[in-house]
Image (tube, rainbow, N blue to C red; front, side, top):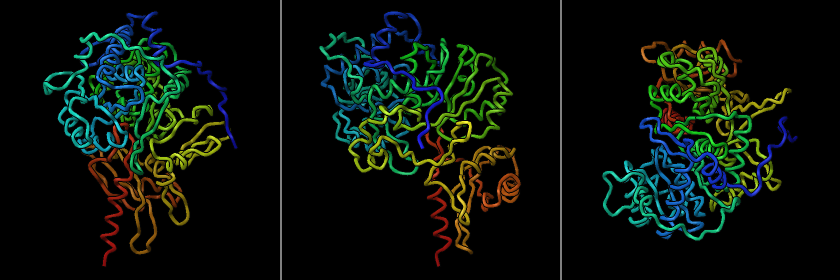
Length: 490
């Protein structure tokens, strides 16, 4: 059965790209702030963004970067990041965004898999970039930096490009259907895969994601720009002409201060930051009255947290569901699905996309009689106990209601006597809290059906997660599998 949105199809302007909208904003609202660094207050207007993107585009073209080339962009959040992405779009190149947490081996693996011809990295990460370049066969003169402090003299920085004043090359107009981005899927259950996204795909995602958003002076992001949701956010700002306040990472005081200072109306965050809004005492020290909407994604979260945030600061919390492969929102018109798929991975593309244009998400969910969509969990992560399917996320939601629990992750354990698969929870306790595995199991048991009860609890210092807040359940599952194997050995 096919379900359609009750809001109808959102019209997507034909023949438009992010570059077209930035050109219009540079002409119509040139002095409006486009990007603001929350730490330094450095500000780029829409005129600045357009001018700097043209200069970087011209400089990269002079360096021999051409249409269709893949360039790895590896940096934490900064005002230069969206400008560089835009410059590559105008050039016709493909931006392969990479996690700033990658070491040289991980970065080299993505560079080789994406067949990148150059690397743009932050100056603070230049040592790792140079090593990754060596491992992946990229020449040193194809490593460019954001910032020029303490970098080798042989490297060119973005700042160098901005002052070169190279004439803009004779480039064809931006083709909205051309590939502009190659992010990598998060790889929580398998190795990451390069996802090919067209300019139109990102633009369509931005139009739909911002369809119900009000006009505003500023939005704010702390989600890493390499993540599809944050990439989508700066495309939403390109489209709507919003100013965006940027933080390189989550710093509690600076984050709250920026919301208050710039009167931010909405933010998009990972679930741990929603928990922060609900429970952290620092929140009460700032005027957050402007904040009316908090979007969360990457991992499921219970309604109790949503209600706690609304009661405390008056902001509604909305949980989004999407995929890198779908440019963020999952409720996309059919034309969005007709994209190239995974880079040089036809087998995975065939598994993901059906012949009639549907996507296999790998998730279990349902739609109720009122049309609300509920995502239960990943198919591969479901626990089977005595023939019943148990969703880890549902148990984690209950665990987070325990006053001593700050974080948790449920995996498939094993009863060594019966050989049965059982629900097991890794639990992080709040600082200073004291409880026992038995008490935790009893707490959950009082709130769920018998087959959903936790049968084992192990206390840990932290739950491994991606930068976007998604639980790396596979890491803990492998740890548990190793424990079971060792315990079962004769």
